[in-house]
Image 1 (cartoon, rainbow, N blue to C red):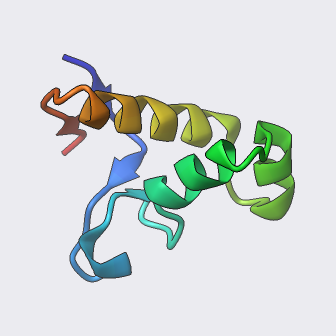
Image 2: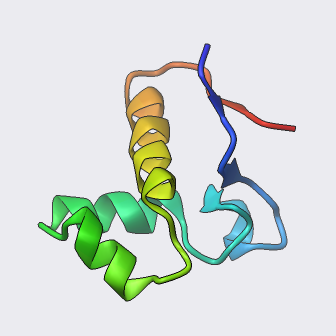
Length: 75
């Protein structure tokens, strides 16, 4: 089972939605932006504190959820 090292869930940050490294950028924001046609480079330009691996991990996390797989976060 894949472990997601960059995805965090904290009830105090964005209402407990899965976020990138504890920041106020959610997995949902990343996936929604990509589905609207934004590119990885667009996202990196818009959010200079993000890293390319953050985006790939967000997409992988969302894919696991969409397939009904259990998701494990790093502790």
